[in-house]
Image 1: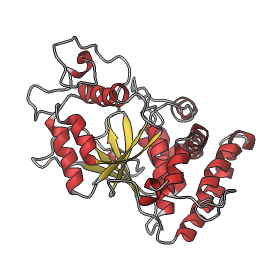
Image 2: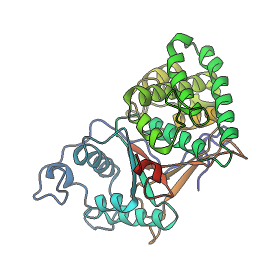
Image 3: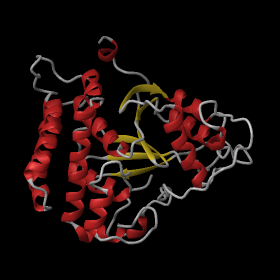
Length: 335
């Protein structure tokens, strides 16, 4: 396992398993015949199978495959989907590179029974983290302690935002929305009901609620980077052309703007300011032994956390949530 990739003492510790992927200027691929992916145009799918089925795909092939699976096969995916068995994800790759299949099997064998999909809209990291974070609070061994600690951290984040130059009127509605969902774990809403896994999923599929929380986390990430430029400035590069960027330009363009994908800098900053531990599994199609071992990058910020670490699945250009459960708890099915 790799530790947090942003470390001032060892700046070269950025994980080599998570390269920045270019999202523009990808080469066009000619139609080469019948497609093994029935839901994806042959012109897109033909590039996904390596010359040898056990040969790793190139970075561009990997990125294109992930994006096509997200955008072409399931165009109407919800913002946050119910839990699904890992076998569903495995089936999407069975006709392509077998390296991915072996990595999915490895994850399954090591405790990841299910996946919760997030819409591939550029906000998937923030939305995945927010949902998984609140669900960890909901399922904590001591929910009152977990919620109280979380609210305390969020209350302390408001001065950070103001110090970064954000006016309270800009962020307070987003803040209130985030805190309200968390408080509902302990305090009933107007309908007298506490937060459940079902109502959390429902809330995150409401664009008003879900996007408000995403925006707040983006602003919070930006504020953390702006407040500590010495820590982050050496890692701020344009994700497409690789040129270094100033803190303000980077934050305005690639952090605060919705629809922009998160990389290690944003993940490190947000996990630190939220004081949450994150474990990211990299499903990248790289061969690491016959068993298909998957590398994890750890963002550890709390030694004795009152909640379990959030576990995310990274595929080039996209994040989902990994879970030890393969289906929703009964409270969702009973609705």
